[in-house]
Image 1 (spheres, helix red, strand yellow):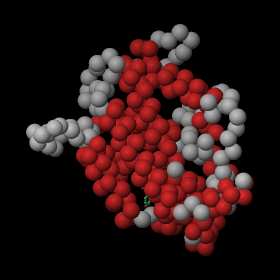
Image 2 (cartoon, rainbow, N blue to C red):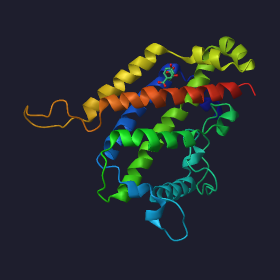
Image 3 (cartoon, rainbow, N blue to C red):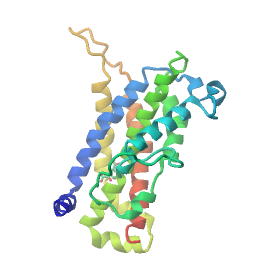
Image 4 (cartoon, rainbow, N blue to C red):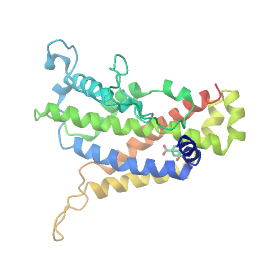
Length: 257
Ligand SMILES: O=C(O)C(=O)C[C@]1(C(=O)O)C=C[C@@H](O)C=C1
C-alpha cells in the first residue's frame, strides 16, 4: 500500500497541480462573493467592541482562534495543504492520524506565510471589495472572512507542491541555483508569464460568470457583478500569484537541506 502511495505521488505532474489551482479559483471567487454580501462591518475587527470574557482581541480574532482550535482537534492541520493563521498554542489532533503521502521535502513544514496573507487581506483586499457600512452581522462577517482567508492561504501554500514538481522535472536546472541560494535565477526558472496571464483572465471571467444576477427572461442586469471582476484579477496579479511564487522560492531554497 505504501509503495502504491509512493508511485502515485511520484507521478504528480505540473498539469495536475495546475488543475488543482484552477479548481481552487472557484472556491476563492465564491468566498469573495459571499463576503461581499456584507458591508465592511468595522466592529468585527475592533478589540474594544468584542469585550469577550477571558479574551483580549477582536471578535474576528476570537472566531478564528476558536475555529482553528476545533479544526486542529479534528485533524485539519495534519494535512500538509492546510496552514493555521495562529499556529501557536493550537491543541493537538484528537483523531487517528491519517498518513498523508510524503510528497514534499520536510522543510516544507517550516513555511507558513499566513501573517502576510492576513495583513494583505485586511489592509488591502477587504476594503477594496466590500461596501463601507455596518449591518451588525458581525458573526457571519467573521465566518466569511475566515473562509476567504483559508481559501487564499491554501492556494498560496500550494506553491510548495508546484515547486516540488518543477524541481523534479528540471532538477539539473534548479540544483545549481538552489546551491547558490540565487533567488533571481529561481524566479526566472519558475515563472511562466503566459500561464500567469491566463490565470488573471480566467479569474476575471469566473467573477463575471459566478457573480452575475441570474434572471429568467432577458432583463438581466448586464455588467453588474457581485464582486468586481477587475478586483479579483487584481488580487491575483498583486497578491495571490506573487505570494505563490514567494512560497515556491522559500521552498526551493530549502529543497536540498
Ligand atoms: O503554474 C505555475 O507554474 C505556477 O507556478 C503558479 C503560478 C500562479 O501563481 O498562478 C505562479 C508562477 C508562474 O509564473 C505561473 C503561475
